[in-house]
Each structure stands twice: as structure tokens, then as C-alpha cells.
Length: 83
Image (cartoon, rainbow, N blue to C red):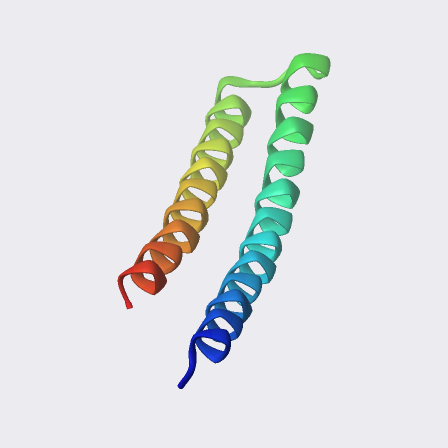
């Protein structure tokens, strides 16, 4: 494989990673919007202690998902760099 082909392949891999990362960021954005709606609901409504606990559990679950998606999509980039 000549230098030009190698560069083309590397750029193609980078493009694929960027497209994948954008999809993951779109998913993260949806989850962050869900979190925003939950916090808005908590502020605007008079909630019981149990309802607040349930919303906090949902927020924590969404935060865990966001962190996992972000970490996983970054790890894939790191492994491609190693290859």
C-alpha cells in the first residue's frame, strides 16, 4: 500500500469515528434533555418525598448512561489510534 492509500484509509477511519461519535453525542443530548425536563418538573410541581426519590433515581440512571456512552465512544477512538 502506498502512502496515499494509507492516508486515504486513515482519513476514512477518522471519518467513520466522527460519524459514530456524532451519533453517540446525539443520544447523549436526548438524555440530557430528559434530565432537564425532570429537573423542571421537580421545580414546578409540589412533589412528595417518594416522588422526589423516584426522580432522583431516574436522574442518576440517566447520568450513568450519559457517562457510559461518552466513555465507550471515546475508548473506541483510543483503540483505533492504537491500531
